[in-house]
Image (cartoon, rainbow, N blue to C red; front, top):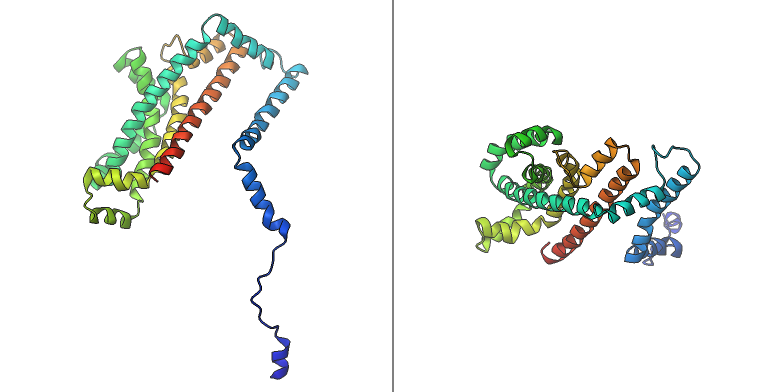
Length: 283
């Protein structure tokens, strides 16, 4: 028995030290990427590589100018539209349509998401209908909107609002269904009921989910913009896309795609700033 005891190593309270390289490297990496300037530079690497690859491919003549114009040709097309005073009009009218349709759709999504997420009766009554409408493709609404609202801004904004409605509704509805019931009971214990309970306890508990839905809705609004501007539009980036395709102006077509990507990213970044403020304020 004594021999067995001698074979066991003596216990020790000293922790086993990790190698300095493995312990410090992840922290250094995370702190480096947390710097705003560094993250921006890292995010710009892939677009710059794609731009260089685009220039190299067109300079080598791999594609014809009709198939893929050079970056210089696309830039010249943008300068030409600016000199004619058309580019800012296209951008302005599209941004106006997106923001208006997004605001209407997001507001309705918040209202219906709150109602169905909090009321079992509203859920049972409206959830099947809204689930079916969510599956309707965007272009399927175009003929009906033209018939009901005629050719004008109302039909375009309504289509964008439809696109923005469902992401907000779906995320808020699902988030409210999964709010911690103990948190709700604590709010009721403090005398909160109805709208006051919603605004004071339940909505702050789902702030991250709300902004996830809002950011998805904003992206969806830009997607629905192109379909909306197919409704006999004479201005806007969606119109610039289809008009460039009909006239064989691939340079303007690519310019419109780049502008949609850049402006969509800018609006998403602005919404991200609002999200960070709201999370610090309420979540």
